[in-house]
Picture (cartoon, one colour):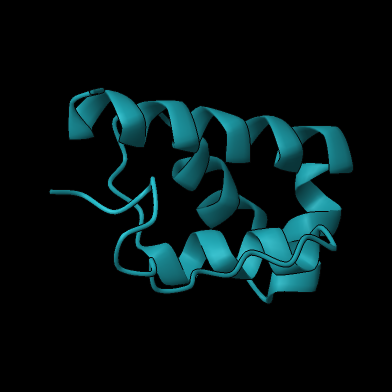
Length: 78
C-alpha cells in the first residue's frame, strides 16, 4: 500500500498537471481565485485543502466525487 504522503503528492501532481494544461489563469478565474493563489497552490510543498482542489477541478470541467465503499467489496479495508 502507498504511504499517505506519497499518495497525496501523486494526487497533487495530477491536479497541477490538469490545471496547467487548461491554463492557470483561466482555471483560477473560473474557480474564483486569483492567479497568485493558484500558483501557490501548485507548489509541491503547499498543503492545499480538498475544497480548493475541488474548486479547481470543477473549473476544469472535471466532476470529482467520492462515495462510500460497500462492505464486502474488494476495495473495503479489513
